[in-house]
Length: 453
Image (tube, rainbow, N blue to C red; front, side):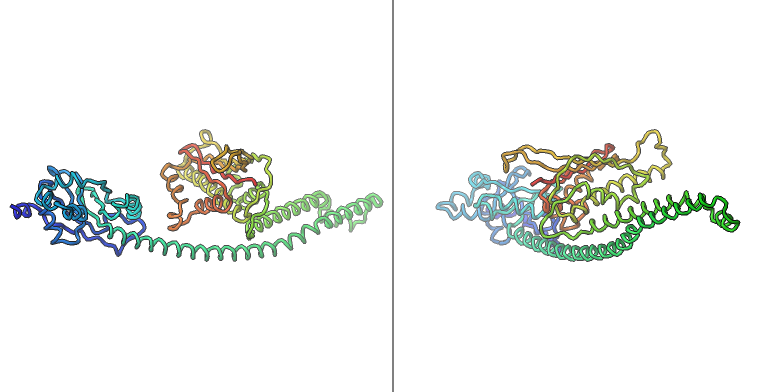
């Protein structure tokens, strides 16, 4: 009779995994799983014989009329059989009776569950169940068993991979920071070299302008004293077009002054943008930072995009100037790219947007706001709010989700985007908040909140 039950049980099957190719995103289907299913009508003796023949099988999947009802582990069966009178009570009885006594919580997971997530769920079980196998359900509806030791080893391997990735990422970030610091010093030096001759021109323009006015006054006095100049002087004045020269000279000096002033502002903005941050934050004018960045990207914006400034009254904000410059550059550049790409797309498709579409626009709004009390603070907190909104086509929900996921430490370990870097600078370095509001067809708004201390 006992041999009859044994013949009804199919031998366990080991589905070999591939632990050598595990990655941070590996799932349970990549591990070694056991397929061992029996009907609850079989006896404990039949299963015990299989466990004795296959010592690595962690348990058995129980079926009733072909449907999954639970799992009985090797440890559970052994504990019941070694109890007083356990062998007499359960050894020759159907598994349904044994399972009615041994029924405990079973961790049932899909085969697409990540190994790290499965490990976290397994460790959250009560202490008496920590060593129990995990039941894995395949996409075809089959049930397999995963030995907890297999899951442990795979989890440690992935943790090692993750640690290595983080180390390599940190080393690459250190190298990148060093390169950027060196580049900042180089650009700062070049800007300083440009600023010296600009200051020389700027400083001498006042004297040149005064000298020119004095010479013109002298020539006017000569004309009054000598109304009838000689033929040679009259020919010379006609040859050099003195009347036009007198009128255009002041305009030329004014143009030179405007160009020198613009070049001076541009070089100063470049120096501020390449500012090497100190160890501690320093007070800075947010509006000046924004204007410096706008001046640097003005060559792409001019004539194509309208920039509207709605500046409020802001106090100086303690910040790392160089990093905050980079944040505003990243956000404004992204907005400019979105608007210009949409304009190019419309031109490529020969769309007439003069009547239906409004001009590409970026609006910058700054103000001081108060946020309600939190669990950490019993009083309202004051923040500087900077909102940068554009009237682009907006960001799809899928892209927004990808952007938000890139803010996590795990995704930054793979690849750091400009928005992820901006998020880290605002939140980690400045203790602020970084938000994105966007709806397809309704534009995009980036909001930066910096605390006031």
